[in-house]
Every structure is written in structure tokens, then in C-alpha cells.
Image 1: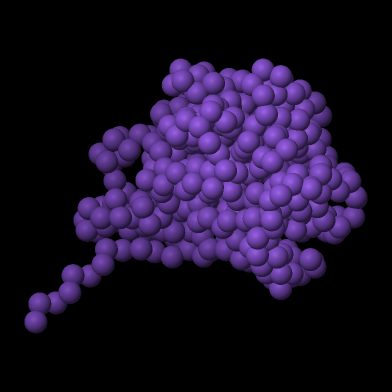
Image 2 (image 1 turned 30 degrees about the horizontal axis):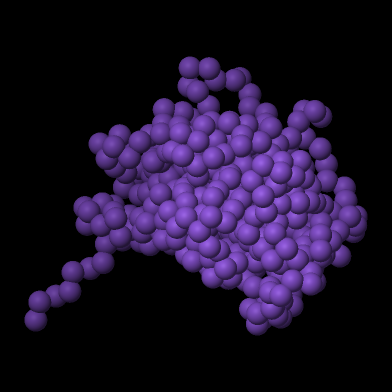
Length: 423
């Protein structure tokens, strides 16, 4: 285990070692460590999920860092093509185009580019694109669809290489991958190595404030090393000659921020959104210990509530299945100690997961087509960040008497809307 995991002693943002110990969720297998039923290990490796906060820059992090090649060289998370996510990716293109002044022929570089769906949208409007993603299986898919992708971890070497081969980038983008990165300074060295003098770095991360206020404990797992506020990102960017010039809030992944940073001395003005969110974070207590400790107490309370509810339903002979098998879902099931006796199966659209067993719980994962043949009494909505879209799509299930359990921020049951009485 020593060669796979290391303990985080100094803050990856500011280098200090003054930590608030927030809570522990115990030791669990990796959230994306799906198992082949034909080759089951007697015991799955499990690693601690302990939450800490730097008292200097207020980075929230998990204490134990898994070696990145173990997590990401073969990856089963594929960017969602749901209506919600597709619309969001198009918004990203609009936001970045306006702020960076992108013109046809200019270069866009994306780190953690997955299968290239986001970069393909920039290609549609005439930009040159290069993606960098360590998952070799996903980079192969991206290249096959015509989005040039390097199967590597992004850093200073890759930034210099792209600059030498392709020239300066008007935009360096990282969507929902920055929280996965341990050596964030190397990544920003890569960004500044390729960034044009008037270019922008745009980083999208789940927003710490939303995580705390909405009890999103299930987004805390080994792949997510860091949980960022605007305050912390301002500390980080300043160390690389960058300053935050704008922030957009987005509803995706339970609440995210897209932070735009420019070089110090560039002509990009700082917009009011930056000070507005810095002020909101202070007002919400993110600069003190209390907000984090209160979250920990609420999180463990919600874990107990979800577990008790599902076990009670199963104990009464009602069938429960999981809707979706995202990383947050496998995490929630493990934290709540729910297994096949309580959750019969999980249905997920990702073909890489079909026929496999969820890590830790060994609940089988099935395709939506297979799930329709044995629909349960209740679906535990593990992909709760798509709740509105899913419930709208599954009205037939609700009309037949099925119910959804939405677990976050607190468990609640959704049933079919009653038909209004005819006067």
C-alpha cells in the first residue's frame, strides 16, 4: 500500500502545514474500481477518506493521495452527453469565446479532455484544439473522433511541447479535472508555458460553498483530492503570475464555478463577480473552522438517514435499486454501508460498467435496457445532480407507482404528481 498512497503533510496550494482535522469517512475501495464478476479478489484494497482544511489558504482536501496512474490510466468515467451537460458545454464555449476573444484558427488547449466532447464544440467554430488526458482508453476515443489528444498527464513539459509545436494558446481550459490533480503547480506551469500574453486560463471545479451547504459528502472520494473556493484559487493563481478576472456559477455537478484567470499586467479587467464571491465566502464562514465542522456533523447525520431509510424499505420486502452508478454513487453506497441485500442493482448508461460489480458493495451494474425488465419499487437516485432531467424522463415509472429517493441534501421521496380532480 505504501507505494500507492501517501499522506498529505503540507498544503498543495500554499505549502503550510496548519491543518484542521474535519472528519473521517473511514477506509473504502476506489470509487471507480469496478469489479469483473469472473475475477473477484478475496478482498479489495481500501484507503482512508479523511478530510482536512488548510487554515492558511482554506484549501479543503483529503489527507491520503492515491498514485495518479492507479486512478486514471484506464478510466471508466466518460463525459455525459445528457441534455443538461451538452447545454453546459455549449455555455462554456460561449463564456470562453467572449472573455478570451477567440477567433477562428486560434489555439484552445484542454487538460483532462476526456473523450473530446468539449473541444469538438470549439472545433465547430473554427478553433484549433489539443487535448491532454492521461486515460489512454479515452484519448484513443477522442483521437478517433478527430480531436487531437495526447494520452499524458498535463504539466510544464506538455505545455512547452504544445507551445513549440502549435504556438500560443488563447485559452487553456480545465473542466472538472482540476480537483483530481495533486501537483497543481506543475499544471499551472504548463498552462503559463503555452498561454498567450492576452490569453485566459479557465478552470471549472465543484464549488466548495455548494458542497458544504448542500451536504454533498458523496463527492468526497479519492479522485477528488481538493475542494476549491474562489479564495483558495486566488492564492494558487497568484503564485503563477495569474489573477482571477471573472467567475461564473453553474448548476452542473451539484454546483460548480468556472474561474477565469489572466496574466498579471494583462488588459483583462477584474469583473464584479470576483469580489462578490470572495465576500460571500467570508460571510459564509469559509475563513473559519466552524463551517467545515458543521458540515461534517450534518454529513454523518444524512448518511445515517439514507442508510436507515433504505434498510427499512428492504426489510419490508420492497425492492430498491440505484439509478446511475457514478463515482458519487459508489461512494454514497459505501459510506452508507448498503449492499446487494438492500440495493438489488444499479442501472447506468456507461457501457464500460455493464456486467461489473460496484466497488466495495459488489452491487451489480446493469444497462438501462436490462433494468426496465425488473424495475424496482424505489430508485435511489445516485446521479442526483441530474435529478430534474431524470425525473422528467421517468414519468412512466412514477405513474406506475414507482418512487425516487433523492439522497442529497437530505433524503426525500418523489412520487407521481396527483392527477387534479375534475370539477
